[in-house]
Image (cartoon, rainbow, N blue to C red):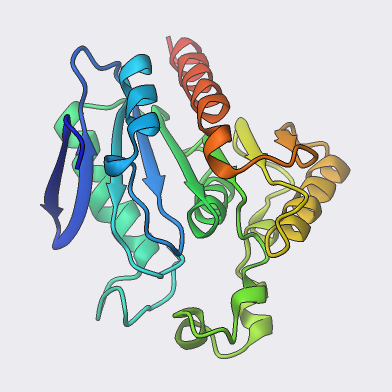
Length: 238
């Protein structure tokens, strides 16, 4: 774990926490992928947090897909989404006295789809979301041995809980950013489908589905987008 990070037990779950000196009154919630990476061991990610004076919490959830479904591998009673909404984020708001709408969500693959899905489900609470190579068609992972097989009775029920089907035509997150390399065989179609839907509905968003770049090359653009969006929300609330 890199300097500046600490691992805390928050409501019975391990969470990596970064609180840089002179931090701005914002928070990034980072949701990991199926590979269960953590920014606490990523020098570039940490450097960007320091540069932008941005706090970050990165919960460890295993292969839970961060869904509002019972996942035995995550917890016997709480859903992953329920843990985020009712325990982790309230803890962070209390610790740093965060104002409403001063939290951004982001992630890669499994975590990217979860960040965007949460923003679609709760756009007033989470107006800012970013995804790198988001696994938006998570039904494509059904039947491959992930906890999805226990969380949903079949592939179709899994598809009905995807981010794209949580888009409300009347309200949506104010700041939405997602990217995916056209060479990403598993995730590209879901990102393309999401962009088609947003364009058809006239929902503002920023996306790049044409640049064949690895995930780590998108960290700096993603962080710039998130911090700019947080500042816009802060000005809007004045």
